[in-house]
Length: 405
Image (cartoon, rainbow, N blue to C red):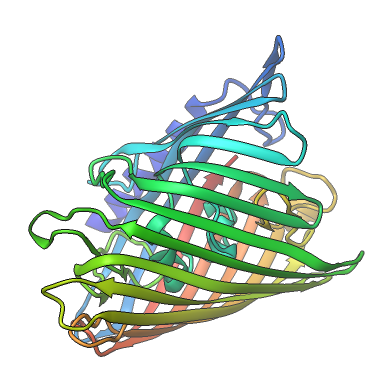
């Protein structure tokens, strides 16, 4: 049996077994919550198996592989509708990835339209970033969303946050430190914020506008590089390959920040959205350029062929995945929920000395939800990275099996 097939089979068994262990009963495909004495326990899982590769790539040959890109399991507990506690462990990426705490946070929700949270979690920043990983339209977020949010927000971040939200708005401000786990960088200090809302909302249409920002005023201490920042990402796919063709390496920095605009429009089954960001790095010696500037953007469209289209959620200020309009949990209307999507993204990390390349990627994808907790995705990408340290051209085909509840 080929190595890729053996690895994908092993990872798939791990994902399914881990998800099943977090619930004692499954009724019609729906994972139940457990309530007793004013306490509600809701099991959580986002388990993904990615299989795919690069049938055409030059000059390198990344090949085909499989990865349990995300194996996140745990629970969220609500106490008397006032206190929320999240405990989620990240067992991936598998094989070989470092296990770590994904979420360990406590929040107070007793004040209507407000939330105050502290611990390890994902602070609010950006439209695509605030979509839950299992709800994203594509297998991976756009590169510019990833490289910006990882500066002072992103997953597994040590932070304290205040949020207010309603039917048509979402506002969040957070103070952040480093990330948890083996790559802990707790000596970093920064802030992040996001303002988003719906200036237009009708029965068939809505318009979303927002603005996000983050600033690291004390970069993490990176051993021989001193206090520094870096920006890198894989080519918007995750099949076990770790090549970061887009990579600035460590930049000696006094401070750094990212600011961006976001917009989305929805008409019936069609959703169109995009974001644009600019990145500023104030360097320190031995860098010879005082300030570096990078930028990036993406635009995408998604159409729900069968099922109820994506829905805007005030708590996240972002869109959920499509669901079954008939409230069925198995093979909605005999076909399951089906969604088609396309995206173009550009991330330009070119600058004097610290040049990470200019990446442009076209992506087309098809999502199928045969059950309310299961998603299968097929995705094609055409991209190229020019400049930087690792120029590359590629065609990639990726697939994903996901269990999410």
